[in-house]
Amino acid sequence: MSGVRVGNRIIGGQSPVTIGWENIPKVEGGPVKVFVFTWFQPVVLFALIAFWYYAPNSIAKASTAIAIGIAFRAAMLLLEWFAPRYESWRLTWKELMTDLFYVGLGYTILNLIEGFIGSDAIIANALKSFDWDKFAWFTGLPLLLQAFLIVLIFDFGQYWMHRGMHNWYPLWLTHSVHHYITQLNINKGAVGNPVELFLIGLGLGGLFDFLPRAALIAGAFGLAIGTYQHINVRFNSPRWWRYLFNTTEHHSLHHSQDYEASRSNYSNTFIFIDRIFGTCVDGEAELLGMEGGRRMTVREQMTYPFTEAWKTMKDRFGRTSSGGRDLVAAE
Amino acid sequence: MTTAILRGEDTRTSKNRMNLRSIDWIWNVRGSISVPPGQSRDAAFEKLAPLFGQTGTRYAMAGDALTFSKKDQPAQDKMSVFDSGTLWIEAGATGLVLRYRLVSRALLFCFMLPLLFLGFAGLTLAVNYVQTPAAGAAKKPEKPEKKKPDVAMNPIDKALGAPVPDKKKKPKSEEDKKPTPTAAYVFAGIFALLYVIGRILEARLVNGLFRRTLMAA
Image (cartoon, rainbow over the protein chains, first blue to last red):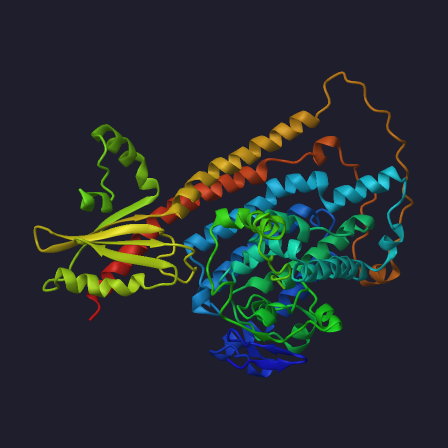
């Protein structure tokens, strides 16, 4: 396998990938299907933004956002079932059950823990202790700008956390579990070791005071852009969309079995952050995972960072050590 | 006796066997299919063999039975929900019959998940209980709430007709801030339903898979 040169790197030398938008297949079918799968993403995004912008105060609240989020994900599951991008990524009962287990952890035990030691809780305590005020001027900005900045600040932090996870062995141990998935489905973003799920949720949002409506619009950005990262559906995303936003194509490349391909496309929502820092690669992959595509059991997903850390420590510091392992093997 | 063990027939005392049999349907799928007329035992196993040629799967013929085990099977494996099992062919009233017993840790895990999430709900309630100050306990003197100045709506939003933010916003009470066990109850319900669906669906799917494989020309 020769791979394709992208800048200084050879992408696809270990596992097949498709590089360049011109080489990515288009949605096939009648004109109605092509029309729907071309305009679905922008229409949903702008419709959600307009909804939250103009909804009366009695409707614009978190419970409405949760209901829309659940309905949207259910609709996307149906879309995956009837129009799968790859047959090899088709959702099975076992995959759905495992995915929902992790979604459930996020809504319950992790949420409970984050209430005590999450970034928002820590920042709230720090602001209280030092008698600082939040950046109150933020609320005076136009709503859409507030929403955009909320997403951008979070995504910028997440970009560096994610990039750090691919470059620093202790962080990689927590994140590697997520890279053992062998297919992308709508809920796969939730799959990972709980330590990673906690780390990736850290953000600086707690420093800012913003209007509740701006947070709801920011949530719409996440729902109508971020959700597609792990979806098993092919869209003809418009050129401007794929230039600005992360897509399932970008993210499938990030999950490729090819090592170099997996070191690209780190952002969650705005792929232009990757473009700015030179880590964006436009393309896609079908063959995903690690170690030739072995799927971890839930038990191993829970213990892997700790058992691997223990093995590495023993190799490095153990009396019987004969040389030590490469500490950045995970890169 | 060896074959009996392979088929999952417990050779311990009959009481123990009864006890285990009464609950092992939770993670065991059993079934049978008539082998097409004219197909020999060896020909049937030969047809079934490719199903066990997947990544992470090992299988062996022992006596008149095929046993398999899977480790880290990928999602693309049509039998990924099963971790081990035994298939054997015996003579039935109208011809040969393929019988099988398949073991699934995923089914057992899903069966246990409602209990785990009910545990999370209990933990949430316990945390709430611990955090609730005892009745009559002296209330900490609170700092006087700073009154935030009303933020004028941005002129752009005013011009575009966005609703004016509610100024009479009630401050969040201690009750509102408490974590709620609702999500844990919902997920316990989801997994109970998912188990029932999976137990029926996966049994049907694997039966159909074996049937189609045996029937294939």
